Length: 402
Image (cartoon, rainbow, N blue to C red; front, side):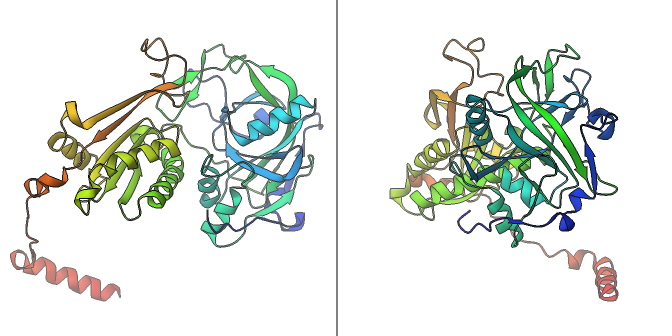
């Protein structure tokens, strides 16, 4: 993030994504038969593209480009509905274009270098308005992401994508997400539930599909670990940067736990180095909550706890926490609209959808009691004397493999 590598534009001759071109004004064009958009459950609103990287630019300043992943439901031969979370940069671009009565050119890029997907998952406030997350991908790759001009819209596409859908977000046009199925549901989302179908979503009018020869359509499932890891890595980086800047050396590691979809649950490993560090764990948790608004619960643990082992986390919660003094609740804070418990129907304390009670579980040992909470000091055991023949064969096989 601190040393982004900006994308570069290449000619169409250097863009594998345009080896095949299918224009929507061809009478035989039909998105439903051209691309195998999956339907993941019997109650899905329809076929969805679940790993399409949307790329669009500010209609007032084309130098401001954003990339992000949103759910896209196939609604017809050349139409997609697009769910845009409030506050996302592309949604701001769409609103600007709609206010001017103009369509917003957009490309949907699928089958990409993993670094591009990871970079695209960085979001505000870590990446401010106008920050092109493709620069993060370039830094991860240590070479620029290559872009190419679209064949049917004035917008760029990822040149080395497997498949690109080009189109326009239409001003003033909305559709019901489940208009063809009446299922009442959308698709499996990252929290593990099939969210409700949105009654009014913007529409992308598809202008063209381009793809590689023998293209591969990449997808994922919302609650799957591939998705939650994609979401979690930027969450972790955002929290680490914020806490390290405020309390240098205190935070040892961060894990955006997959049980929280990479967004709702953060495990913070801290190290108290002196008496004055007591209480800083709470400060670290507050910084994390302020940095990443979608976080709901934070579990704080000491440096001797493996944050990637759920058993170890629960062990710390069981043996190093007392509910009446170790839990802090902060009600009335904005969370994430896809958490089904964040509704007034769930609790009268919740004033509106997406409002949450943030909770901090402090499972760290008080500084004054550290000597009472030392883990059992098991010694390392050399197993070779107990199975000499086995280890002799193992060493021989390893030697022959070299």
